Each structure stands twice: as C-alpha cells, then as structure tokens.
Length: 166
Image 1: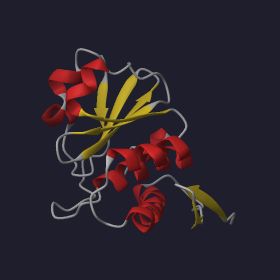
Image 2: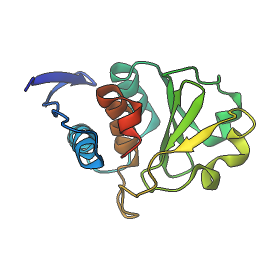
Image 3: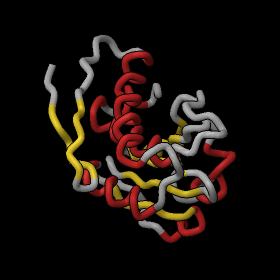
Image 4: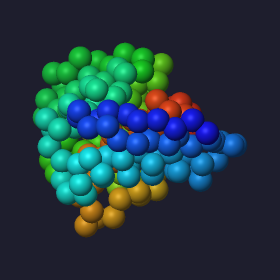
C-alpha cells in the first residue's frame, strides 16, 4: 500500500490511501473518514472559517473555485466540469461539485438540495443531484467544513461515482 505525506496549510500530515476492493459504500466511507480525520487533525473539531477552508481547498483540490456565502451564489461563475465550491448556508458548509453537466450537492446533514438551494440553483443548473442522503454529521457536531473538504478530497481519490455513496 502506498503511503505518503500531504501538505495542508503548510503542515505535513501523514495520509495512508485506502486500497478500494469493490465499490461499496463501506470502502468509500473509509476513504472519506480518513480525509475527515486528516482535516479534524488540522482544523480541530470546532467550526471552521471561510479563509481556512479556502486556503486548504485551493491547495489540495484541483478545480476548487472558493468558499462563499449562500447570498453570493447568484453572482458566482457557473461551475464547469470537475470544478467545486463550498457554500455557507448561514451556519453550515455544503460542497457543490460539477460532474459533466450535473451539479452534485453534498450536505453532511443528509438534506436534499431543494431544502437548501432550490430557488437559487434551479435557474442556473438544469440537472442537480444529491449525494446519498444519509447524515454523516450529528446536529451537535461542528465539523461541516472539514466534511465538505473530506468529500471533495474523496472525489479526487476515488472518483465522483464512488464519492456519491458517502
């Protein structure tokens, strides 16, 4: 198994990629959880700020376009294939990723995009889908920023089709 270090915000952190045998949710969750542990180690398990998420996102995720508040979404450039944003819905971070012509929404609380962005996004993107709608985060946890980065990193590691299982 190939092991290495990745640099997050100037700090070298050990990351041991998982060997995915099969494509089931359990294997993909292992990859996601490894990234989550990495980001929790770097940020801690408290709420994150846009500047911190931006710095790490630009550093680690190809096609990352930034971190923005929801009220700025209608002013943002439309995402192209393999590009992503992290959006703040007020007190929660959500990841958006463009897969060909389909916008994929990841919410660690497992909510459907219609509850969050329907009126804003439906005019911009003709096809929108949610990641598997099971919650990865408990309501009392403050790790949604770390989870958004972990999901976007999972895409880079295993591909969007498998990352949809998180």
